[in-house]
Every structure is written in structure tokens, then in C-alpha cells.
Amino acid sequence: MEPIDKLSKLLKNTALNALAGWSMVLLLSLLCIGNFIYGRFMWTILIAFVICIIIAPAIIMRKLSIMPSWYFIVLAIIPIVGSTTAYYFFSTSIPFYLSVATIALLLAAEINWFTAVKMNYKFAILLVLIVTLAMSGLWHLIQWLLDMNLGTSYILNNQTSDAINSAMMHEFIYAAIAGIVAGLIFGWYFRPGGSIGNVEIPIQMSEEASNYITSRPPAPIRKLLGISSNKQKLAAKIMQICLFILLIAGILLKDLSTTINAAAGLAITFIPYFITRKFDIPHYTGLTLWITLAIFLHSIGTFAFYESIARWDNITHVLSASIVATAGYTIIRAIDIYSNDIFIPPKVLFLFILLFVLATGVLWEIFEFLSGGISSELGYEAVLAQHGINDTMVDLLFNLLGAILAAAWATVYLSDISYRLADKFEEIGIKKNK
Image (cartoon, rainbow, N blue to C red; front, side, top):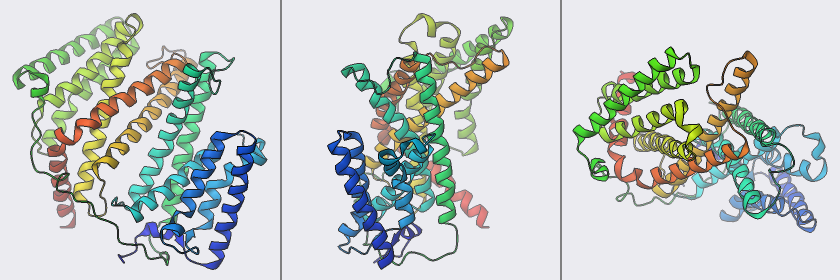
């Protein structure tokens, strides 16, 4: 048996906790049958999934007395019970998303206990927030796709497109609030001190990492682009000059949206130079060109092309999402390399990147929604604007596409950067200890 980590506090091996846990499992089973009889198949599937998560430790460890702490089970099932018996008590969806966050924590802990994946409780809490936001976005995206293709009416109903979009934005905000609240609750629960769970967890099966951990530098991205490094630098500089010209034009035309987007975009294009100097990392021209291209297309789209070219917005979302995915991969991979408490196999990391981009997309849509609302209240032109439910859903869909494309090749082309970042983490840690 390996040393018990703080995530093991989620498990209890007492008669009283087992009685409470199995009683709630029995209640869930009855609700599952009832929902199936009444044709509420989505809730039936959800309840069955929650039951599996709750009883998994007892089944895997072959000891019925081992169950998650009863209060975590309560947090997870309150909205389920309420949706079946007293749904009118829930004025918002915050309890539902708090349930999603709790289920995500239990699932993360079980993955940590019984698979090759390793994580500490801090990483698990971060994962809870990401999963809560991502599930909200994915849930609405799936319902929208069903409405569009099968004629259902989960989201698309008799309301206007803007009204439906506004209602969904409130759902996203509730998910964000619940994720933050859950993170605070779980952080308090795992606070230093206190007793650790009295359940020993089986030794995790370690995955052979020879194909995952490699010091081989990435194949130059210029091979993919087919142009030399000097030409890539020139292209990036030309786009930066164009952004500066666009900034001046926005100021002269008193176009607030263009001015802010051009200024912010121009500043972002210099971030790769700052990072490479700050952390003494070799400069990768292809990545700089990639980031600059995404910013450039977004900024000129704001000025002229978003309204006149139908797919311009889709292209910029794919590029932007691919950059977010790349940043997420590089940082998480570096933490993985640096920390002995965290190990994320490639396939799991691929899924994590998709969730990360979905969560980031949801946060961006919330930011756009709030920005537009505040601008409208103050009587200014919206710097960031939404154009109804279909526009928002298409944005999330293309975000997901960009994440898939980036995550698919990131392992090959970005490992070297992650290793160099991990070295810097090590150096910073040594300096702090001194």
C-alpha cells in the first residue's frame, strides 16, 4: 500500500457512513427507475452514472463498508432528488452545477486512486472548476445540435434568439459561481491538518512512460508551413505593423471597438518575446507567427470582415482555440514533468485539453455577454458583442475543433518547450528554498 494522500479523505470505512451511503444509493436507484418509467431518459442516465461513481470504491476494493463521505454524496444528489420531487425549490441552476462539481471531484479522486493517473488535491480542485464550466458548455452544445438536426426543442423554442442566448449565459454564470464555490468548499475540506481517511488505496498501476517522456526537440514547425524562419519572422512583423496602423485608424475614426481590439492584440503578439526572455527559452518563430496570425485575423475582422465574410468568425475561433489549447498543454505538461505528485498520460491529457478549451470558451462567452451588457447600460458601443444563440453555439463548436487540432499534434511539437518550462520551475523552486 502506498502512503495515503489527501484525496483519500473523501473515502470513509465506518459502519455509519456506509449505512448513510448505501441508503442514498437505494434512494437514487428508486429515482432512476421512476425517471425511466416516466420517460425522463436523460435523468435516468445521469442518475445511473452517479450511482456508479458512488459505489465504485466499494466494488473495486471489494469491501461494502468503503464509501465516499456521506456529505459529498448529499452535495451530489440534492439537485437530482429535487428535480424529481420538488424542482420548484431551485430558483437557479447553482445547486445543479454544485452537484456537477462534487461528482467531478469524486470521479477525479477515483481516477487518481485506481488508474495510472496521479494528481494532488490542488490539481483536483482546479480540474473541478474546469469540468464544471466545460460540462455546462458541452451540455448546451449537445442540446443545440439535437435541436438543429433532430427538431427537438431543448434550447430552441418560441423565444427570440437573443432571449435564448441570454438565458444560456445566465446558466454559464451559474456554472462559474458553483465551480468557484465548490472549489472553496473543497479547499477548506482539504485544509492542512485534520485526520486523513482511514482507507488504504491500492498501489496505482504506473504507465510505461518511455514513449511519453522524451528529450527529443520538436520538429520545426516551418516544415509544416513550408517557409523559412526568416520569412516567418518577416510575416509576423508585417502583421504587427498592420495592427499598429489599425490602432491608429481606430483612434482617428473614434472607433472604440477597433482601437481596443487592435491595442490589446498588438500587446499580446509581444508576449512570446517576453516569455522567451523572462524564462530564457529559445524563441520558436512558428509559434509566434501562429499567435500573431490569430490576433491579426481577429482584429481586422472586428474592423471590417466579421460582418461581410460569413466564415471569418469561425476561422478566428479555430485559431484562437488552438492557441488556448497549446498554452494549456504546454503549462500542464510542464507541471506534469516538474511535479512528482502529478502524472497525466497522453490520452488523458488530450481529454483534459478539450475540457480546458471548452471551459475557457464558456468564460469568454460570459465575458462577451457581461461586456456587451455593461456597454449598453453605459451607452457605449460594445467592444465585444454576441449575435444570438446560434452564433454562440457555433463559436463553441469551432473552439472545440481548434482544440482537437492543437491537442492532436501538441505532444510532438511542444514537448521541448514544456521541458524547458519545467526546468525553470525547478530553478525557481531552488531559489525560493535558498
